[in-house]
Image (cartoon, rainbow, N blue to C red; front, side, top):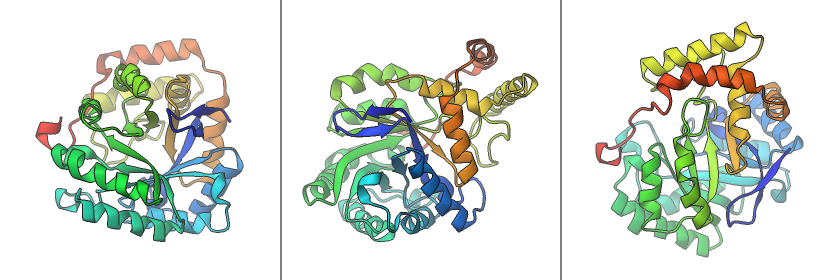
Length: 311
């Protein structure tokens, strides 16, 4: 496993990270024991970052993760979770100081740990930025001072929102999803800014939430039809040449050392091992060039998320 220094935090983080959304049955109903085994397989094979959230499976992901981590030394893993989003609708967001501090305590209890390494403001685009800057993040710094968390981060879909917030308040880490992958590299434009500030980078969903896979995205995926069609065409091209689009997508994203870690969600032990093998296999430059050609008409095509003013 390749390890990279996570910004100014000093952490040596595995380039491939374990995404906990699948423990909450985000992509399919899971067998709890299988999910627990997938965490153990990840840790035993060098993955040391686990990212989750209360939102995933309405706390199911954190609960199952807590069972998986029982008896495992705390220094074997770096733990990241989130605050402020607790359900699918606008009414399920709460960025207030009181709620995010309570959320941290709830996550600590569910997972069964004394501290969390990274707490992230979840899906900021659904909130009021003034509140996030002047209330939410200061509350997280209070929790940091009290020893409940080690670092403060932010996450959202619109890349420009990350800079807008960091221009006004310091954070230690960001999580961006679906913006550094085969079909969309918008996050790369922010790299010099992030490097200047020493911010750690979690690149989530390098398979674009399964857009870049042979099985295709789940029904709830928000990608526009044109993007779905081109990704399906790229998947068919890879199958024709005896390979998997998801493998190529993971290799492409992980080839950039400036992206510190890449979060892939799966509750399958076999898939964890396959992801590790795919990440370590040699990238085929000719195949990559052809797939990039197919995806060129939809490069950086995305979708809106959250409040209109935040997009």
